[in-house]
Image 1 (cartoon, rainbow, N blue to C red):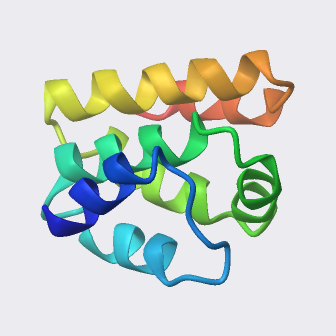
Image 2 (cartoon, one colour):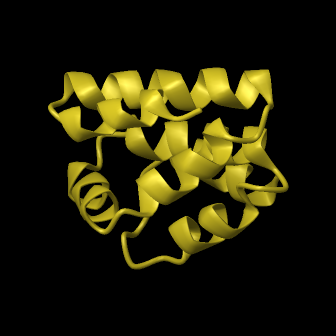
Length: 101
């Protein structure tokens, strides 16, 4: 919850070297809604450099897969909204996430 508040306070603008994505990946199983909200804040922020880094290292995809498989309807809705947003920016490879069971 503290991480979500921090990300909200900074409007999703975080340092790319920060351990946020590792934390989100590791907590996505136990706290899918919080993690989905954190990802939404980060990836809809104006900090494009970090978005690029996180996308190309697969960190977003790994966390999204866990959230999509969580069974938490609110978390799934939030991560799908984030995926839709990113696909509109040209990250078409994320479309495969919608094919997950």
